[in-house]
Amino acid sequence: MKGTGWIRLHRCLLDHPLMNQRPPEWLRIWIAILLGANWKPGKWWDGKQNNDIPAGSFVTSLEK
Picture 1 (tube, one colour):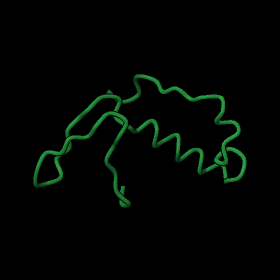
Picture 2 (picture 1 turned 120 degrees about the horizontal axis):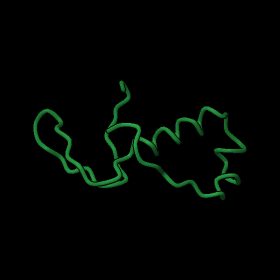
Picture 3 (picture 1 turned 180 degrees about the vertical axis):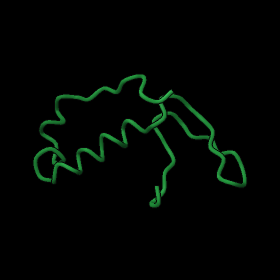
Picture 4 (picture 1 turned 45 degrees about the vertical axis):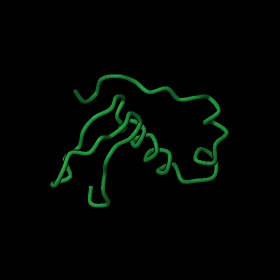
């Protein structure tokens, strides 16, 4: 179910270039990527075969 669970952010993120040297949108995109990652291994059908997607990974595209 979407919208459940949590991720952990370390305080050292405050010193990261994404916080200090890049536009705020970059951090927002990075957090969206973290929230979209699998928290457990999964499968993804690419139209031809099932592919294993490990925990901490996700599938996306430029169109999406």
